[in-house]
Amino acid sequence: MYNLIGAGLIVIGGGIGLGQIGGKAMEAIARQPEAAGKIQTAMIIIGALLEGLAFGALILGK
Amino acid sequence: MNIFKKIRKASILFFFSLTVAFGYANSFSDTAGNVQGNPIDTNEEIRDYISHHLQDSHDFTLFTNGKTGKHVGFPLPVIIFDEGFKFFMSSKFHHGTAVAESGGSYYKIYHGKIYKTNAQGDLTLDAHEHPTNKRPLDLSITKSVLGMLLVGLIMILLFSSLAKGYKKNAVPTGLSGILEPLVLYVRDEIAAPNIGPKYRKYMGFLLTVFFFIWISNLLGLTPLGFNITGQIAVTVCLALFTFIIVQFSGNKEYWKHIFWMPGVPVPMKIILMPIEILGMLTKPFSLLIRLFANITAGHFVVMSLIALTITMKAAFGPIAATGTSLILSLFITVIELLVAFLQAFIFTMLSALFIGMAVEEHH
Amino acid sequence: MDLLNDFSPGLFIMQAVILLILIILMRKFAWKPILDAVSSREEGIKDALASAEAAKKEMQNLQADNERILQEARAERDGILKDARELKTSMIAEAKAEAQAEADKVVSQAQTQIQNEKKAAMADLKKQVASLSVEIAEKVVRNELTNKNKQLELVESMLGDVVLN
Image 1 (tube, each protein chain N blue to C red):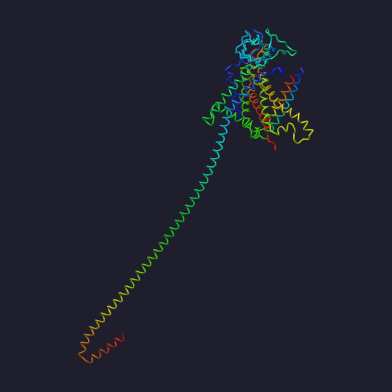
Image 2 (image 1 turned 60 degrees about the vertical axis):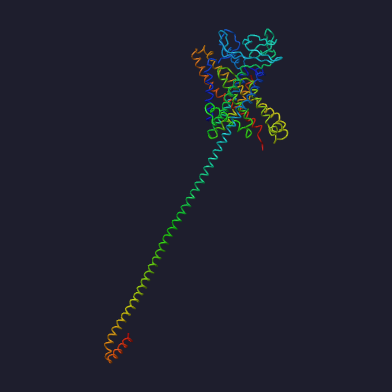
């Protein structure tokens, strides 16, 4: 039960983080469409790091 | 963006060829030694089934007839190191229902793992329902090992043909025309920008890992029921390779940054040292957890959605349940195709990044 | 699903062995030839582009050369033509002058000849007149000598005439 609540919290946190990354990346691409490739790569890397964190927490909480 | 189109083309081709070959219905492939004559239809059984699928297995079962308990598939060789090597086929276990005898010792499979037992196959369980029996070193050709061998074979066939093609023609055509941009993608987008001028040395590792993970992920989406990159042992091994390569290619500055951070006062240096050492270890840890969790979650979600056809039958009727399940699982499978590539890309990318950090020349 | 229990050391060892072998095999039989071929192809393309650029430059140089040579040839032609024209005019002038001189010479020769001829004719005429006069004089003298007075008179008048002439 508690670890389900924990999982929910992790997902909320991760979701907010991913939303921030994605939103900012979109803004950046809209501002500088010619740098889209680099921004995308950086976005994916940061997203992956965040994802690793969230998954780590999920697995450790299991 | 052209590269993504080609990747999509390649993965769709690959996915559909295997899907057509083996059929959608086989998704529920390997089965536990579930009670014979009893189809899987309750939530509990489905959960067991899925967790069984996520685990490694000692036999290759395409599907099981639940009513008769007949398994369609073939057994795989078991190799155990327990006071000397022991070989026998996994059919000896009768899908976990029988005790296998080899060289005077008795073994039993419990939840996909081999335990040493007495002649009756008694297992003593602890508080967490884990057997306390001894686990011999299991070097069997399990389903995942078979999958890895298959992936290796596919890679060698594909890329040696690409390599041979260059002898005839400098510009590859056909299937090689799809493979070459992928190799160049790894070189130009992953290795070269992250590692720097010394990238050539690491290309062998990065390319192999990239294609190994990607093809394994794609193979996991086929109804064959492979779950190679969803095995924690496999991802641990992959991440360990990265870890070792990073440590061995680390230059003086890299080690200096870990043990004696330049440019900060001495007390900070002492505080930073354990943090940096921890960081050194968490990098590969996040690599292995990410890959493992993504693939496991993907398989879990796809199988759960397919299981909707059973769990929702009572509430919505068979047609609506099957339709919903089909649409949802199709949608998620398409996303999983993207994830399959993305995880391979991320793993290789971060490996390249870590190697790049280790070999970077500071000024 | 707890990780430590799920971790299979056997699978780990198998994966390590397979991955190691795969990396070595792929490196030898796939990645090395592929990357070598690709980079040599890229080198080839770079070289080809560079040589095309060089060829273009050379072409331009050649064209400029051609232009220059053409210009020179044109200038030379113009010079030759000009020379020829000058030569022509000078030749014509020379010829004209020569012809003039010749004509003048011929005319003056003719004039001197005429003069000579005239002189000769004059002399001849004088001689004839003289001989005629002598004849006449002979006749007259013969006629007159018969008469002494008349003779004297005649001589005297004749002498007077001669002096006058």
